[in-house]
Image 1: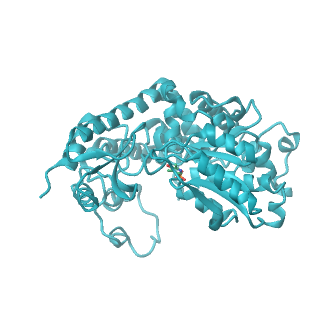
Image 2 (image 1 turned 30 degrees about the vertical axis):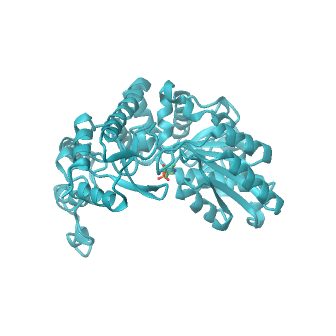
Image 3 (image 1 turned 135 degrees about the vertical axis):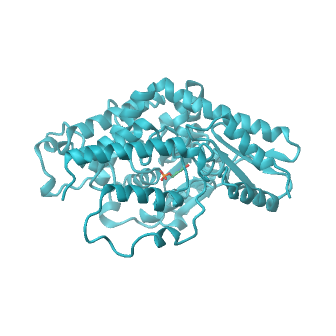
Length: 469
Ligand SMILES: *Cc1c(COP(=O)(O)O)cnc(C)c1O
C-alpha cells in the first residue's frame, strides 16, 4: 500500500524529470492560462478513487489536467504583478524539507530547523546590510513567515500590545488605536488592522508626494490631530517599493516622526528588499536601523520559491510578550532553560515548515555575488524597456523605475491602455498587469523570471507598441 523507498526513488526520478522538462518548455506555453471557469474541474472525476492508482496515471494528469490551467509564473514572458521567482536549488530545498517532514514549532522538535533558520536570517541580514539590532546577536532577530501579510499582522499585534502597556491581549483592543500607511500601502495593512481589532476606520492613508512616496509632514500632521482627539497612534507601516509603482517611502524621516510620538515603525519591502544585496542599492533601506520591524520576501525576487518572507524585529521580547502562550503539553527542558529560540512564539500558527533549507540551498548555490548578478540583470532589463518607452512619441513613463518594474502608459488615454493590455495578454506571448497612478490607467511591466532575456523584453515592447488595428 505505502510507496516503498525503492518505488519512491523511481517515481521521484520521474517527477524530477517532469519538472526539468517543464523548465525547458516554459517558453512554449501561453503565459496566461486560457481555460474557462470550471474547465479544470470538469476534467476531474466527481469522486475520489476507491482503489489506489499507479503514479504514472497521476503524472499523466499533471500534464493533461493541470498544465492547461497553469499561468506560467516562471515564464520568461511573465511580467505581471511582482515576480514569484523559483530556482533549481530552492525546489530541491523544498524536496529535502518535505522528505524530512519535520514540524519545527519548538527548538526541541528539530534543533536543526530552528538553528539553520536563525543562521539564514543572520546571513540575509548581512547580505542586505541590516543593522545589528535585527540580528540574533543583537536585541532582536529574524524569523521566516509565510508571507509579508503575516509579517505585517504580527507587527500590528505587537505594536497594539506595546501601545496598551500589555493590556490589549487580555482585555481586547481598546477603541482609538490608530494605524498609518500611505495611500500606496499594501492591502495587507488594512487586513492586519481588521484582524488585530483596530478596525479599518482607524487606518489612516497618508498622502504621497509626486513620486508616490509617503509625505512625512502629512504623517506628522495626522498623528498630531489624532492625539489631540485622544486617539493612540500605534503603528506606521512604511513601504520600500510600493506594489503599484515601487515608490520608496523616506524611512529616516518617517522614523523621526515615529520616535517623537512613540509609534511602532514597520517597514514593508516585500518585493524591493532583495535589491539591497547590491551595495549600490543599499540606499533604499536608509533609516531602517530606526525601525521596530522590517520584512522582505525572498519568495518574490530572491529565487526562493513561495513561501518565504524574512521578518525582523529590533526587540524580540515584544514577540514573546505578545504571542507566547505555554500550555503544559509543550513544556520541555530546552524551552525552560531559556537557551533556545522557539519560533512558535514568533508567528501566528503553532506549526511551522522547515523553510530555511531552501534559503540555505539558494544562497550556497548562487553565492551572494550570484544573487547580486540576478538583481542587476533585471534592473538593466527594466532600464532597457524604459528606454524603449521613452524613445516612442506615443508612450511615457508613469513613475521612476529603480528596480525591475516599469510603469508606463500610452498618451492616448485610459481606454487605449486598457485595449493594449487586453491585446498583449490575449496573444499568449506576454502577461502584464495594470494599476492606477495619479487617477490614470497605467501599465506595469515587472521583470522577474530568471529566464527573461533582452529578447523577451524586446518582444514585449513590440507587442505593446504594435500599431493599433
Ligand atoms: C507583495 C506585497 C505584499 C504581500 O506579500 P505576501 O507575501 O503575498 O503577503 C505586501 N507588501 C508589498 C509592498 C508587496 O509588494
